[in-house]
Amino acid sequence: MTKKQFQAESKRLLEMMINSIYTQKEIFLRELISNASDAIDKMYYKALTDDSIRFEKDDYYIKIEFNKDKRTLTVEDTGIGMTEEELETHLGTIAKSGSLAFKNENEIKDGHDIIGQFGVGFYSAFMVADKLTVVSKSVDSDQAYKWESDGVDGYTIEPAEKDSVGTVITLTIKENTDEENYDEFLEEYRLKSIVKKYSDFIRYPIKMDVLERHKKEGSEDEWEEYTEEKTINSMVPIWRKNKNELTDEDYENFYKEKHYGFDKPLTHIHISVDGAVRYNSILYIPETIPFDYYSKNLKKG
Image (cartoon, rainbow, N blue to C red; front, side, top):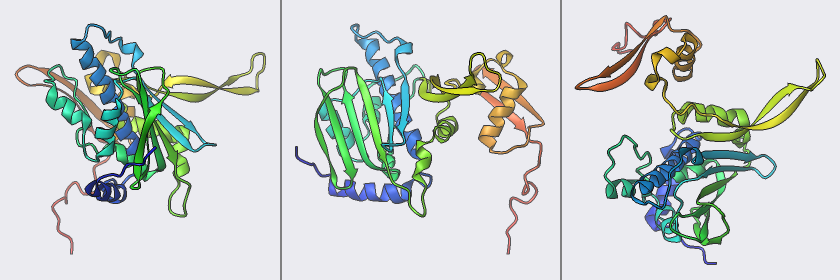
C-alpha cells in the first residue's frame, strides 16, 4: 500500500488551517457533523431521481461514540458514502468541496441547504487528532474503502469491510500537553455541550450513548448506572416551532444557551411573518443593559 502525498499547496494550507484558521478547537465537531448532514441530504436528493432508493427519514442519523481507553472519537453517518475516486478527490485535495460540486450539479429549490461548501472543515479534526481514519461505502458501489492520514505526511486508500452504506470517521485524539487538555473531547458532557452549542438544529438525529442513573429495584438509597442511546439535538429551531407548543422556560433556556449568560430576559416577542417576505424571529429584551450601551462609539485614550 503506497502512501500518497498531498499537493504542495494543500500541505501548506493544511498547516495554516490547523494553526490559524480556527481559533477554537471544539469547532472540529461542528464541521464533521455538518459534513455528515450533507451526506444524508445527498442521499435524499438521489432518492428523488432514483426509484430504487426509498428515503425513510427514520433510517438516517448521525452517531457519536468515544472510547477513553483507545483515545478515539467516532462520527458515523448513514448518508450517501464515498467511492474510492471520491475519497481521492474530496479528501486527497484540501479545499476541494464535494458538497459545493454537488450543489452546482443539482438545482436545489426545496429549502434543504447543503452546509459544507469550502472543503477545509474536515481537516480541522487534525487540531485535536494525531490520525484520521475514514471508512466509507458508497450507495453506488459494493466495495467499501478506507482513507487514513497522519496529517501533512500524506494519506493512504485501501479496500475495507463495511456492511452498510455510509461513512465512519475515527479520530485518534492527541495526548494532553502542558498547554492543551485534549481529554475533554472524550467526555460525554463536553461532547453534548458542543453539539448543543453548534449543531442543535441539524435536521437529522445526532445520537450518542448517554450514561444514566436510576434507583435499584427494591432499594431506597442505592443507585445503578446504565447506558442508553439518546438523541442529543433538538433538530427543529425554536423560532420555527409553533408558539403554542413552547413554554416560557423553553424561551429562557434558549436565551441562556445563545447569550451565554445567567440573566433572564424581561420578555420576548416571537414573530412569524408570511407574506411578500417570509421570516421567523424571536426578539428578547434583556434584564440587564449592556455595560457599553450608551458609549459604543466612545473612543478611549
